[in-house]
Image (cartoon, rainbow, N blue to C red; front, side, top):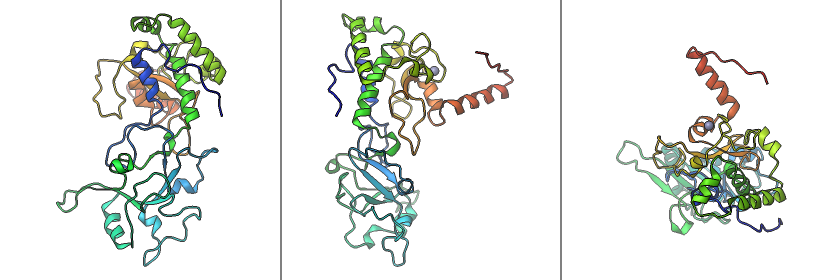
Length: 331
Ligand SMILES: [Zn+2]
């Protein structure tokens, strides 16, 4: 076990920034018509598609709150008359760590759960799962085909959604380390001391020193590595990993939700949000220290799916196509 931290990662931070750091431990928002939970801790039960499970993607230490493998009905029922497929991995058991997931009308009609004895929609994220399947089938234009939502929809199951996307997972240890590191970076944004004093913090310098010390103890204060990973610049300022401009504390304090949230962003305010250097993608666990920085809302939106390198190539192409010349600077 790691030793207990003596101070909070929030120490001395203006409340709006402290809240932003805290939220980095949570997953992104999810709509009700998906099987994912909306903004919950990153160490929650993970949902693993069967195809990914077969590739063996579990982290070394496993998942703190378990996992649920989901198989499409076509993958699960491969025999006629329908019964469990013989090609399923031996370590998967329906209702224990495996559920059948219905997400299309065709699946629902072809393999309707009512035709299987005692099949119920699942309710628990821990084994036994309380059922064999979960369904999120969108409605169609036909009057008879209404939305189908079964499993993990109410307070019995602790809210909607079966679990989190596997690549959003982070252990509680990692969630803690990354929060301290993001606090460490927040103290390196432009104007942070002034904002902290405005908020009534008497000794912001002292708070910063304490966070620095804590991060050194945790082994997450390597300035060279942070610079190499585009998280700070040579003057030790927190920068946006895409455009490389220093982040203003004010941008960090701005309370506009990320693009995937439901609030409509106010485009007149520049905001900075959590930025993953190596983007979140299937088969990797990229919510980890030295891979997170603070980046502009718009830069984040551009780079989120592709990562930095591919986004830069894309931007180069756009500029060239628009008749702008690009000269690479010699270092
Ligand atoms: Zn930027």
